[in-house]
Image (tube, protein in one colour):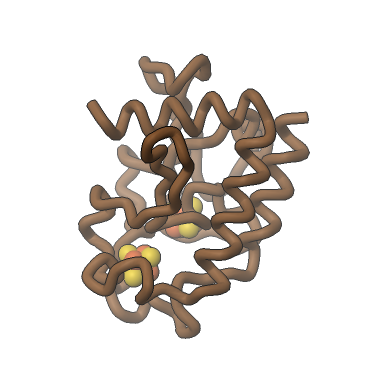
Length: 157
Ligand code: SF4
Ligand code: SF4
């Protein structure tokens, strides 16, 4: 179940972008500077989609997000658009639980992203809406929901 939900969430954000224009031209694609060490966290089961990947590799992490052993995808700095990890598709958004209710927010740790200066309302509405739908799909799956709660807990440390 988890992989189907994950694929649906990825599909919802396949063609959505934070701005109507290519925001990478604003910042030199600051979030896509592959340095061979840092990367994007993979959602549960997403690692299966990157077996044999030619534009990056998976780094197992020595911590858990919820019940899930974390894995990081480290890219070379470019990728086929349709193969972007879900975390890249959602960037710079993040799901918080405020008084138990899920809320899509800008991720303040995405400090290289100039879009943070404009707030959530500065992003394209269809992008934020697609992210909300994707998060709601993920929350309907126990494995993905546990992971999202774990991510929020890690954010709060
Ligand atoms: S850092 Fe922000 S503005 Fe730059 S490409 Fe990434 S999402 Fe777009
Ligand atoms: S996987 Fe693609 S979208 Fe994600 S950081 Fe690397 S180049 Fe950017």
